[in-house]
Every structure is written in structure tokens, then in C-alpha cells.
Length: 467
Image (cartoon, rainbow, N blue to C red; front, top):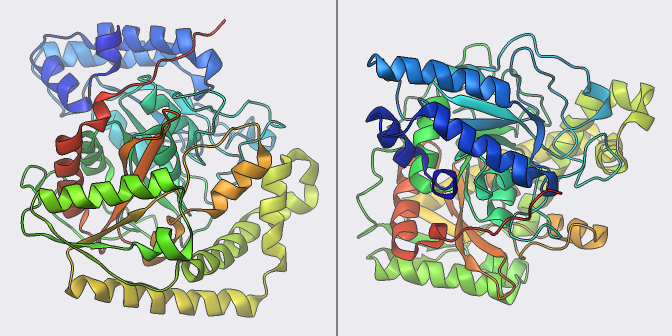
């Protein structure tokens, strides 16, 4: 069971296609693992072992007759519970939507079904992808598998926990100000916010229409690229979807970094904010490792981090309040405290401030993308601190303010969080690798070279057992 829990998508696909592993055996092993451990971690809001076994049996029959669908065929996955899966509730971890049953699959869910994936269930999130970790909701918050007393990040909290804990090798989350990359950073996995519009957001509960992204969390870079290739693509019914046909995410994976120009945005975590010394050292060591692997590494300067964060916050809170205004007027008591407070802040943003923020966003994005005339991609911090205790609300709120992720929701290009080691307390450290729009393949190429040279992904948490 332990070996199966730590199979990557790529490894599992090879075994399944060669009929050296049964999809049913694989699903049963991960089901047993969830049943044994998730009572202490709360990754799943709705665990669906019956559906998983049904999918696994179908996959097994198809593989037996040679009908191979690709790298996710027979492989377990799970969805953040703001993504529609037909016939199941999409609750957003909120009392308001506890009975909201999806009538159809979101396109991202439909693509994973079509790829032959084995659906394990719906994952915990911060309420409406903004309010958490909260203890006043119908379900408890997810916890960090490296130490359950610590925060696992959010809002795609269950996705970070489930992948790091070996419950599933792949999960789908969403990211408006860092909500894929935060749990990836806190849980020691890979999390990609792809280029805006690369993955359809239809059937996904919105937080802020102009900032929302959908993307994968996995334990390895290769798996992340494989899954993003499956879920990317134009959706004419999503007004934010792009028809840009970039190269496959896996196209450059094994080409190394020799000769690539890497710009380090060090002022984000050394001057604009003072990162925890262990985090800063981990990022600096990662940049040094890329140089040792043959990349041309230099420091670059962008606008101050605080300007990006303020612009993102103005846009996000305005758009989020517009989405929730009616419920906030009619059912404010049905929100958890954190979601209500964070959403209500948008009521106090003037229309002029919102318009000016959208104009500033374009200028900042253009200025940032202009930097790529001299570099191929950039690296910087994701979180400024290792995971804090989950039962310390002041520390959690402080953590949310201390990050460099929201900048790249504004710029719209790909941003990937990858592990860069562990703190002395055994908690994950991480960095971001950032590209200009539609350069996911290049971002994954650099991340793959770093991952192979360091092998942080070979380390796994020892999980608590549910009572």
C-alpha cells in the first residue's frame, strides 16, 4: 500500500498500461489509505470510494481490451469542492451551498473523466475560496500532513493535503491570489497557476472573474505537466478562455537548463518583505543550484511587491463582493466569520479605485513582461514563511499577507511553486518559477531540472492515523 501511495502519475501509467498493476488494486490501496488517515487531516469533504471503484473497474476493462486513453487512465484524482462534478454537491465548503448539486460536469472534470481518471472525491477548500482556515463551518479545515497542528495553505487546502499525503497523485485546485501555489508551498508539492484562460473556468464557482485560474497540484513536476496538458484547451463558453495553442507542457521536460537566462526577483523576499531566514536561504540555494546546472542566473528588479499585492487586493475584493452581494445582504449569518469579513471588505472599494486598479494592472503586466527581453524566466519566493500553526489565527492572517503569489495573478503568466527543502522543524520550503504567458513548457523544464538535481520529492510525511 505504501508503494502504491507514492506512485507518480507517470509511474502508475506505465504500470497500468503494461497491465502490471490493476486499476482496481490501485484504487483500493488509496481508498484504504484515505480511510486510515484522513480523519486526522480532513482533506476530503466528500470521499467517493464507490465512484472510484466504478471508474477503476471501467478502466481495467478498457485497458484489458487495449483501449488506452492516456497517462491518467486508471489513475486516481480529486477536485477542489468549487468545481462541478455532475450529481454531487458543489459546496464551496459553505453552509450556503451545502445542498447545491451540480447538474453537469465542469469542462475540467469532463476532461479528466474522458481521460479515464479514477475520481476519489471532492476536496476541502477555504469557504468560497477566500474564508479560511475556518472552524465555524459545517466541515473542519484541512490540515498539513507534515504536521497536523500546522496550516496546509489555501484556498485549495484539501488539494495540497491530499497530494502530499499520498491520497491521490493529482488534484485540481483554483488560484485567484495564490490559492494553488500556497498549499503547494505549505505541503511540499508542485502547484501550477497556468496562463490566464488556458484552462476553462466554466462550472467552477468564481471568486474574481478577471483573476481566477484553474490548475493542477501533484507531487512531481512531470505529473503536473501531464495533467495540465489534459485539462488545458479553449472553451468558447468561458469568456476568459484563450484560443492560443501553445506547445505541449511536457515538450521540453528533459532538456535541462544549460544556457537559459534566469532572473531572480530577490527584492521581493529580501527587501520588499523580509522572508524567514530558512525560506530565503532555501530560495537562494535553489538559484545557486540552477547556476550550477548551467543556467545564467542574475538578479532583476520589478515594481515593489506591495504595489502588486495592493492592486490584486483591490480588484479581487471588488469582484468578489459583486458576486456575493445578494447572499451577504440576505444570509450574512450563513457565512463563516472569515469569509464574511473578507468578502465585505469589497463593499468599501470605490468604483474609481477599481477602475484605476484595472488600468494599473495592465501597466504593471506590460512592464513585467518586458523584462523577458533579457531573461527566459524568473524565480522568487512563494510564501515568505514556513507553515504556521493552524490554531493561531493571527499567525495565519500574517502568513496570508506575506507572500509573492498575487503579483502573477495580475500579470497572468504561468507561476509554479516547487519545493526547495525543509525547515529545521521539518516543514516544507518553496519557491516560484515564473514565465511570460504561454511558456508553461519552459517553466516545467526548469522545474524538472531542479527537481531531478535535488530530489526533495523523495521525502514523504509520516501520517497520523485516524481514531
